[in-house]
Picture 1 (cartoon, rainbow, N blue to C red):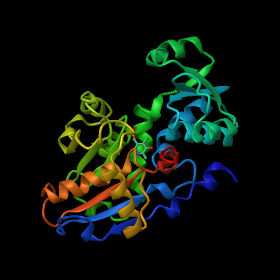
Picture 2: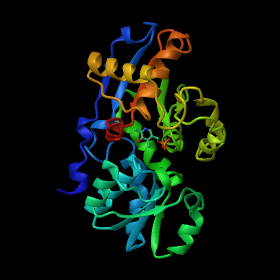
Picture 3: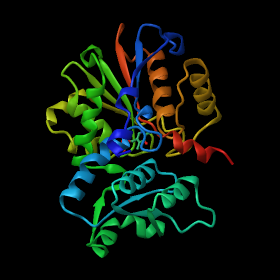
Length: 296
Ligand SMILES: *Cc1c(COP(=O)(O)O)cnc(C)c1O
């Protein structure tokens, strides 16, 4: 089956969440289940890769490369899509080669991704790596950038009755998805990003840099205080929240991104952040493979 045939856009449904989960019952929260798009290329990663891969193919690039950590959803999505499209792909991985590979890295290697490990110091200087490999078409880490945002803007096309929503909420890493969503949003909608990193204060500026119409930044609001200690950090409370949401709503979340973002929606709802009667669209951006790093 081709990649296009494997991507199950019909499975990406909008799931309403019963209001008891939220301390205030005056809002309605619907979840866009992007996690159902594909078992490996899940969530937002396909959208962010799409136009970069198109560019690579248009350029007749012999090899693609990208960057990411040992548990990265982006790395596994890049490995899978390139393998399917018969494009050679190299993953430059943050940190020295581990004795025991993570399941994500084992899967990426099984999908023919060539793994190259960079020390944390070398990883910071990505431009040097790019300069040393002129034969490779580089996709920015996390699918960041204009092409990534262009693809992410298409996420909202999967939502029937998109104009009914007052707020659109998503988890934020690089900010590419939030920028794309804001670009595609309607004038009456507020786009809310929950940063999963600690003290990532340049994020607001980064997201604004990807907006096609800079005046749309007045629809944008990024929260920086739901990181639970930092990127990929978690508390027992967060894990308990994930388990409760999964049990009560058949809604699996990942601990790095979507659990923190949905937790923020509950917390903000309790604090009466959302206006009364508001309809909130929550983007389930996928990433469930990352939960394998919780075990063991
Ligand atoms: C990568 C990822 C994000 C972050 O997307 P950005 O465009 O980098 O902000 C959010 N959620 C999940 C599940 C992801 O894998």
